View (tube, rainbow, N blue to C red):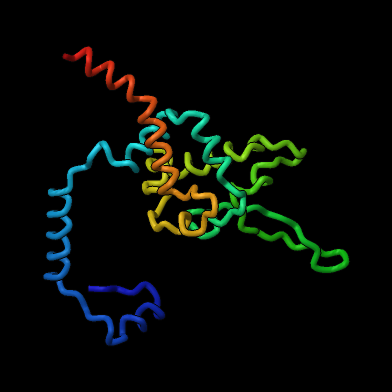
Length: 195
């Protein structure tokens, strides 16, 4: 059933560790996936989905972004280990007396110069503004719709390398807790009105 797209892939499939799949295997996989989809009930209290909703609606308080920014050490580790981060910058470097080479260099939204413009102006000078951009990019529904996938793989690498404890799991929890505190009076008011 496996079809290789290149000769290298075909050679890899020739290894005895791989066994050819039959239609019965594909049918079994489809049945398992259908069963899981039928039994899985999305819950609106999920922290991650709630964070996506709150970020998408712009309901994150500035003080929450500031707290996240204050914890960040601007090392860039989270973005360098993230399998979904692809930001880069372009620079010219000398390779000879009168010769330059244009190179693409991996960059990070955590670094101070990331959004700096040609005249030196930086629209995201404050750390919390850069953290806001990173997590908006990772969690906003707009990007999920545009790119047809999450911008977070859920691997936890950012959490493993972050010295300031602002990896994705911590940020989602902070966003959820802060937003829940703001929404709590609204929910209580609505519950009282309905009784």
